[in-house]
Image 1: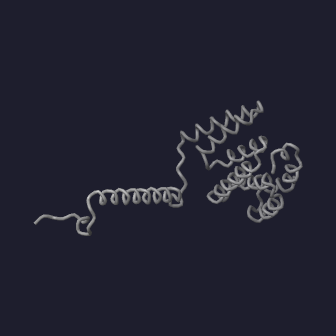
Image 2 (image 1 turned 45 degrees about the vertical axis):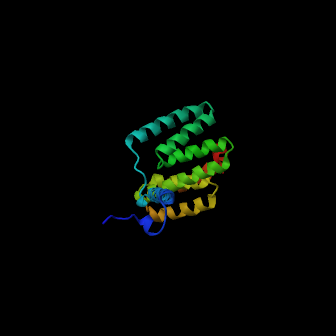
Image 3 (image 1 turned 60 degrees about the horizontal axis):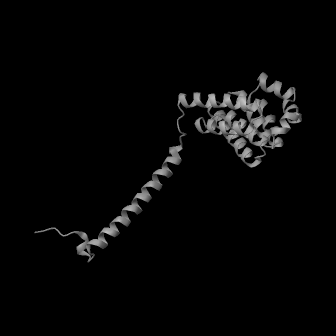
Length: 192
């Protein structure tokens, strides 16, 4: 007894079967591609691992960007910092530097995005390193750069309870470093 294919059982001729099969295959390829892209973007809640080579390359790019900033070549610095943030996307200082360069280029919306990403990376770092006072104080600066000064003040007021007796926190508050920072004309140039 000879096996008949499924197409002949439902009355579909060979060319139509071939076209239908090709359409189904394309549909499934598309579905599988979209699902794999979606699951890759989710990353199971994990960030993409950054290699030491990528970190070194990013640091080199940032060094070149610093030199470009010294020469007031902000466009070049912006390109270099963009590459650095794509390589080491978890480095808050790279994002904040990118934001400052974009402000100088008059790109306030993209600067805001970079500052927000820098703040998010600081928050993630602090969540993993709860005792790192320097990173917590950098969050205050990032909030101020974003123009969220009242939020920065409220955040700062909570730090003595969070870090009782910490000399860095006490010094930052007693010396009114937030007020000094936001009054500084150079800070005003880069703040939103």
